[in-house]
Length: 337
Image (cartoon, rainbow, N blue to C red; front, top):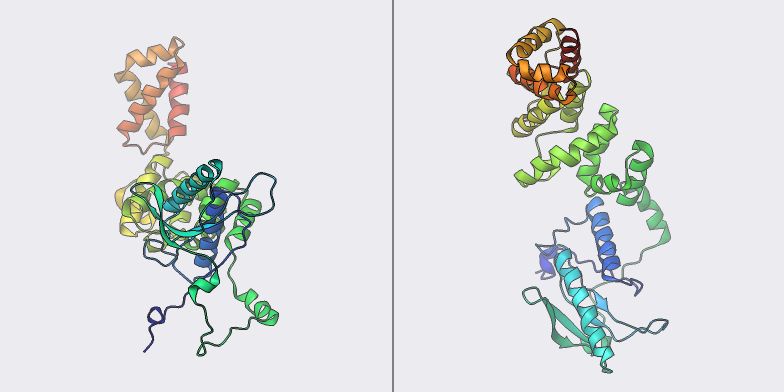
């Protein structure tokens, strides 16, 4: 019988004492989590206990190289609780040291309801754990040769992928950070950018409307019905003026819900833009005739009045008229009438 976590392996990563703030520690933990997720050795679901963080903290006087007495905070299963616990413990130890007292080396629990750490047990050194070798567990020998053989099997890791996104796609570091947050999201963007040749446009759609839909549905991008091919087709429809950006949002909503391709949705719902200049001009003339006040305001120099008239044309065409053509035709009609 196997009582070792029902056969689930446990890996403990112990870092050197070289992190100097709660923020730096959180950044380290996030980076470790990203790497583990990218190489798919764990789902890193902190709420379910797949990943836990146990910070050790100590303070020392400025300029001193000797570390102070440390305390350990056990089993934090969210980054928010982790940073709250560390920030409180730093202040607690500072109060003790400022009072001329000594910090006790112990293991602590963090009570999220009170925002305070409480003692769990005292801890001295390794001897207190009554360590002894386990005769049935052999040592794992990791050779340089094995590491070299394993390297080519790794996927592109988060930091390298961020750097490539910035250089190859000319997107900002903040956008690259967002788009590499998870491996499925990074792969979705990578494929969409490759298909469309419009990385900035892809990034804007993913970080904006697509993220909104994912959050509302409470699903991850790999579980969505929308694929990079959907996004590519949507961008093409906007690019060739088949649909406007406003209509594209409703098309994406429909594709997200049904999984249908954007071209099919546009065809079935008759959403293609009106680009026939004579058809648009007929509607423009009707709108100008029905709204003489705003039309005269524009002719008298109130140029912003054209915005109302554009809105009326778009309303009459149920948003399907090409906005650029509407503006051009309205300007011409109002200038010559």
